[in-house]
Image (cartoon, rainbow, N blue to C red; front, side):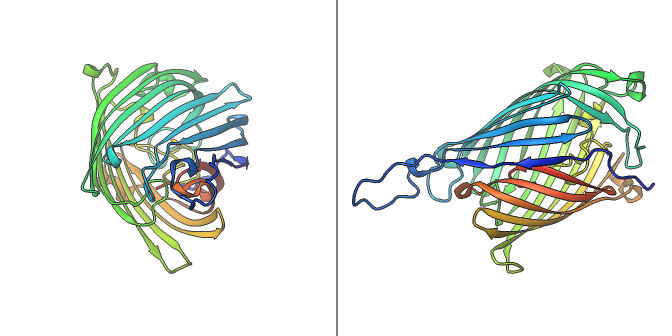
Length: 368
């Protein structure tokens, strides 16, 4: 079924500011660029945007970098993000990512509070353009402890918490109560993740291979109102190329599956930020999803770099039904500004032609 352009058009103005503290060297002393006092500690930028769903949106992001253990080592960080809109929506998120014992252990946590309006289009790749509108008040958190073995293998233990209050606006399928997750609920889960990971940097890799598996189970024993599970297979490949000077080729494939009494927000779906850039988050959802991504990244000048990318995704009730499902594609270009060059920590602005319309995305770190 041919679809019209996405009704939501986002325009954004981005201002970037990098803040660093430097100590003055003693007279006659040789510079030590990797000393803790010389490393950049702060980065921040504001975002101004508008869309029909949010009205005017104003917010910003603030990042703190702990001193890295040495040259080429990735620094621990604390991310803080805050947004508000003229339609009474807001989101606050704090996420520390801390490395221990020379990088052998990593602790990642996330706490967020939000009140946001969203659309429910139904299930499947051919769901109609007409959506049920709802507002979600969410309190969410996650905690992950990772152990790295021999610089190649990783094993994670993780827990997630999600308490939601849903306000439906007007009639529609959600008001029938037949859609799991359409009422207030709490969803708690525990899981594991692990596999092979040789990326030289997780912010913006230039080389390495990823083959990881993730499983999360939500049960009544953990206080979850619904019993379901999620699985994710993640494959990525990065290498330097001569297509453009100092360019990097990045490839990825993702398989997601959901089982049980799955709340509709937890169904497999391209989010529009990390997968199928530019698509509305939740526009297409089903039990299973298959996504393929490719990107060429190259420096432009100084802190600026650019990308071209192509992505495709399918959703279906099962993996066996993927052949009959409609393929959704995203093709676009992007620009990067290094907020912290030594950590390859970029803010990215991507513009994509997706689902018969143009859309833009602003975020930090690479999509994959």
